[in-house]
Length: 352
Ligand code: 13P
Image 1 (tube, rainbow, N blue to C red):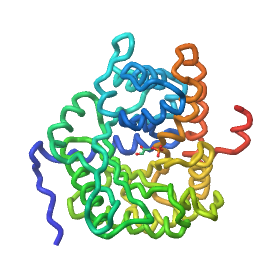
Image 2: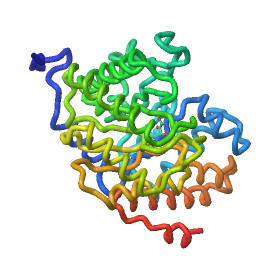
Image 3: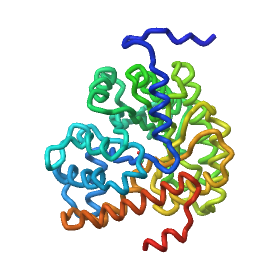
């Protein structure tokens, strides 16, 4: 039989009401999450693409311009930060976390420490690191203003074993359990990658398996689903697949898969973009919300699909800040509309 959650944990009872309130705010229709939590290595790749040197000041300047984009931030419910950013101050000395709060968004923190080879059943499988010491880091992040966290597991749909999948799902559940103990809403992100040549039905089958195992592990570890936000991939074919899918097919298969796997007490689902083009990431989300008929709120938690345009517009130059903020506003507004099923392709043309 399932163990009963103890009334007291190391830090007192789990404050489900507060967790639930934050989770609901993160997925409020019309808004979504800005994933600005690129590690120093990942942001280097993004900066390389726009010929910007990957320095601490450039990372700060770039992120500051987004957090100060008041109009765009109206469509942002929460911001996921990398460890460096949560402690960073803006040029004028204001903590970046305060800028996010002043813009009406909730600060969050990426707490996983990337991946390492699992050396398990299949060569090439990865497992996410970062559980060691997490119970020491979480209260510090809370004190600094973080009310939610993120942990990303990475699954390659063309190379997976049950052992690898289980290790990743279990780590997600350990992380989620710890977050809730420290009054932090866990974003549970089991990402099935979209980079390979697999067809859409393979993505469906693998995502279904991963989600079922993830929710099983969350259940075993007594994670309160009312205080969780799920961050899944959409059901798309791999980027190199011979046959790509229509917006309708992606929307229908994604809804079907999630309905088969995600309990209805989960307040919301905030998708990753995973390398989809800006417009497709928006179109898929909007179509799903237009179709409706599911019990959760569905919104975005995009990194690339929100930031590619502002990054390009900025290109590391102070004189381009306003242009970058305008590009950010456009994508944030489009995705805000998509979270209500109200985006139309014509809206893209009007802005172009
Ligand atoms: P993308 O939207 O670029 O996939 O990033 C979202 C994210 O946070 C991945 O962990």
